[in-house]
Amino acid sequence: MRPAGIVGIILIVVGIIGFAWGGLGWTTQKKDAQLGPLEITHKESHGIAFPPIASGICVVAGVVLVIVGSRKS
Image (cartoon, rainbow, N blue to C red; front, side):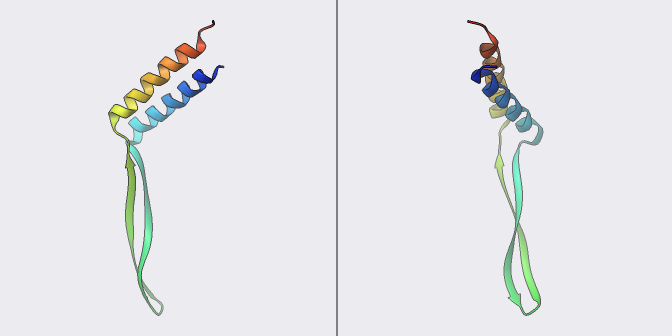
């Protein structure tokens, strides 16, 4: 398979994941204070939003690259 086809497949997968989850999120735990054996902590949520329009563009571009990569010259 040509490199354009491989990149196209990767873009399709990224687009489908973007539609399914809408982004990437994770949680970190921060320590606020420690008084002897007592710890005070809190959790912070972080994330990267992946808008649906970007997912659609990835899928369409991936399909185009797969088609272009599969044509014989």
